[in-house]
Structures are given as structure tokens and as C-alpha cells.
Length: 116
Image (cartoon, rainbow, N blue to C red; front, side):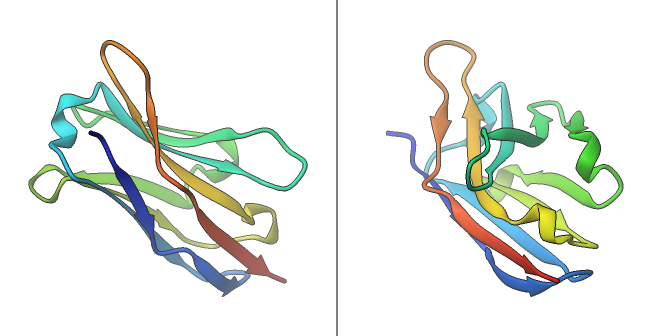
């Protein structure tokens, strides 16, 4: 059973930094990619960043240059380093595991709040 557990969210002032972690009980190398999504109140869930099994990364335009996604396969963990945070980054952040076949998996989410 895949179980993604996010941590690292919290309250931070604008301009600050946070690092989110997503740990899986199994080998994350079995997934096609791992990603971070976010959902702000009243808005649709959106892709923030994704990293493939080969290490290729992609980012939403709104976070390019500020956020960095990385993975540590030995620890079965994916990270999202967030810097220069803005109030508009406030959202619940979700970890996602994209399977080669079958459904994707989601974590329970972690709240990130950026105060102005």
C-alpha cells in the first residue's frame, strides 16, 4: 500500500523559506514521477513542480526560480524547497506519485501560510 506523508508546512513571513518533505513507505523509484500540487481556498488544485524518475524537473511559471524539487531515492523522500515565499503561495500542498500503470497516489496535504 502506497502511503505518502507530507511534512514541513507552516506559517512563514513573506520572503521566507520552507522545505516540504514527502516520504513514502515504499521505493519511490517505482513511480514514473513525483510531484507537488497545491490548492488555495476557492481555487483548483494546480501543479507546482514535478520530478521524473530520471531526475528531470518541471515547474509552474509562478514558482520558477523560487522553488526547487528534489528527490532522495535512498530515503524514499521527495522535497520541495520554497524560497522567497509570497502570500499568494498560501495553499494546502499535496504530494503526488504518478504510476506507470494504474491510479496516481496522493498525500493528505500540508498547509503553507505566507503572511504579508
